[in-house]
Image (cartoon, rainbow, N blue to C red; front, side, top):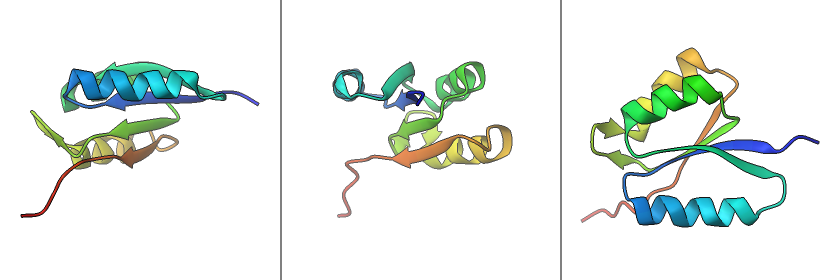
Length: 89
């Protein structure tokens, strides 16, 4: 069985690296790209065509919802999981 290919999207480098480190240790998972913005994620996703994008919700140039909209149109076989620490006030 092939590894699940993942793109990790988070604007905080420490968080992104931590997630990548955890995923790199997981059997059956391969981190194929990282991004810190919507624009980077779209370019890299188009290039590497990941199976899954693990995305933060709030990003400096948009939201994880913008990434989902792009994926639904351009990469219909890619799934998006939103992982965020967003709190309501």
